[in-house]
Every structure is written in C-alpha cells, then in structure tokens.
Image 1 (tube, rainbow, N blue to C red):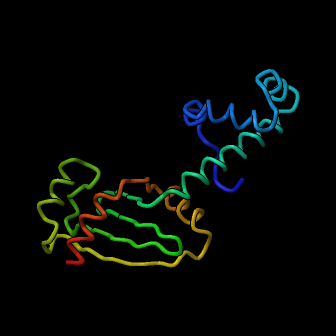
Image 2 (cartoon, rainbow, N blue to C red):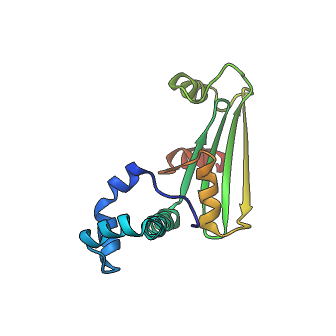
Length: 157
C-alpha cells in the first residue's frame, strides 16, 4: 500500500465509486460478500488498492495545502516539480491561530513586528504525490488557496 487505507466514513462516502471499482474486476455484491467471508485477505487487498487509487487521484489534483498550529500557519502551493511555501509565525505566545480570535489577531497584525513571514521553495525529492501525502499526514489539508494567494500577492507587490 502506497498511502493509507481510507477511513470507514470515507469508504461510506465513496460507496458508489467502490461498487464501480469492484465491477471493473467483475465482482458483484454476492461475489464481494463471498470474498469477505472466504478470503478476507483478498478483501483487504481490494480495499487497499481502492484507497491508493482514490489518494492518487486526489493528490494529483492537489494545488494548495494549509497547516495551522497554535503559533504557526504553513501555506503551500504545489507545482509539478516543486512546492512553494509561506510560513507565518506569531511572536506572541498567547496567540492561538487555531481559534477565531487568533485569526482575527493575525489579520490585524499581519504586517507588524508581531508576525514573522518567510517564503520558501523546495524541489520534490520524492515523488510529488507522496510528498504531498506526507504533508497531509503531518496535519495539512487541501485548500482553495485563497489565503496563499492573498498573502503572496501582497508579498510580491
């Protein structure tokens, strides 16, 4: 398995897609039920293959990621060969970017000495999708890139 198995909730959400996936392998509901009982290891393999296919599709389309922690915000723009980052750090230890108040504070203090802003760029050393998956495993999530674009446009002007 290249990534990780989807959660029970994700499988439920993707139920129609999973049925189609099994159908491409000529496995209908009766056959699937039989496999689960008689060959559970084969059923596990099918779940893993399907999970990897879903992850591969999602990661291939990934363009922006965000990761928030108490005092840091990491914003990423993913390209084919590299990834660009903007990192915001609060120098005030009482500020928590995980709260609405913390984000309002950020908005009010964005270009003051209370915030450190760094940009960077890193060439993918591993396969692109796997590198993005690693960021997700560390707590990043896919985003529309609105925050990255706003801050990047200010930095570049």
